[in-house]
Length: 200
Image 1 (cartoon, rainbow, N blue to C red):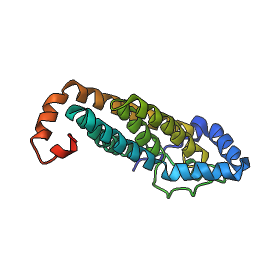
Image 2 (image 1 turned 90 degrees about the vertical axis):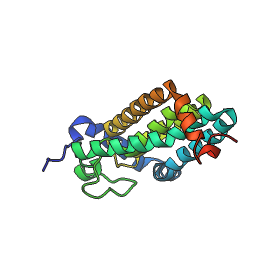
Image 3 (image 1 turned 180 degrees about the vertical axis):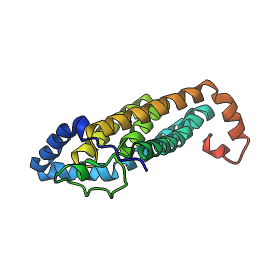
């Protein structure tokens, strides 16, 4: 069995500084960040639906691109989860003596890379291929999600940076490949019962 990686030597001091700041921050700020950290991913799901709804009015190829976004996000989550199992980094709230806003995840719920940051970044980059405006909103939300995971104490800074990088790069690669041959995939889907998903 692999020994769990200890990330405190990377940026444990920076993590401690952030968590200490959270303890001295106004209650309303900590509450807002905690809610965002826990439920913020719902916003990305809403943005995906909005992007798909608008894309249907543009055309079938645009709708296919929009429908690819959740697929890419799920794939990014899966790859990120595999990386967690390989690296096996303990959560900072289990390694360091700190008081955190969010309850520390159970032992074996590894820290690196951050699932939340990966999913948010993958959604943001993929949504740029659907709409620059929606993508920009998602990008700001993704950065806020990454920062919130450190603020509530469940991740080191390097966990969320890695998560953003993993999600962004995977989404960029997948969506770029899709945009090269959108017509063939559009024809295949249009010929099935999924056609209503592509055209309004």
